[in-house]
Image (cartoon, rainbow, N blue to C red):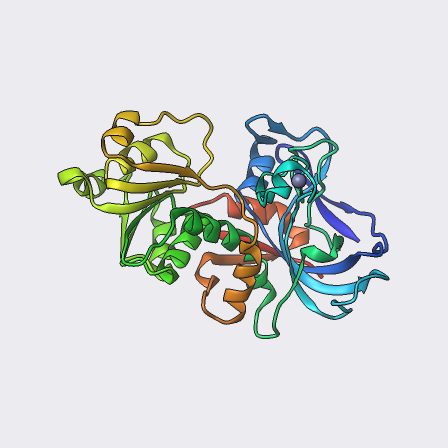
Length: 344
Ligand code: ZN
């Protein structure tokens, strides 16, 4: 069995990886599909982000789906052959935040494919993986493995929508149309937004935003004035989802939000200056949004019932043996959005 292992920036290798039997409350899953996330790309290009750095070889990946291959002795609700989506998040359940129902903020979080802790939490890009039974969500035969592997980023988008509160009849601006921005478009449309404007600095992601349900798209590199005119008369949008992590994008977008509007910051871009005067004088609400919790189950359920279709976001799939090519493609915003690896 093999996995996709990062050793250093631009040093991604396909290497043998150990497979073990599941413990009593674990299952072993034969991975079939795995999506490349922005954080995987940060490890690949830069060896990490912020203070999070690769200090030992680490398997990447945290957006996966597959078929159960073996179940532990105490697992009663799952069986071999079930098709499943895998939640990469494993909060401890006992720290002060877990006990308050804030498991996203767990003090001992184990998140697959993350170098935040040391030894690193090894990732899910591998042919076989053992997970805890509560990380496994059954999917129907009508759902593809490709869709199921998108449950994790869709959960991030759904969490952001919940942070914003009701979107019914709301005018929404989404800045930054990577996979998360595009999934927020899909989720915001489902959640009742009346108008969705999407900005990016590249044309290709904006074509996907259209397919995902955007009312209007603006390339702010080519036509910044098209966004700026929404700033007139104290703004236009009720809700801003800032998904670029870019300070200039944040500053220009906040000016287009109406008094009393909500700004949901999803993009992680290091230290960003806040336009405090605008936030104060327009009485804006600024909220962060990070990862997800119960939304993983909601994501699987909504896709299972065909209420949310994530397929516009998925632009390519390559065999995991071609991981380097896949990572290079995933980093090219002029050609790709969500790139997935297939495992056999
Ligand atoms: Zn905890």
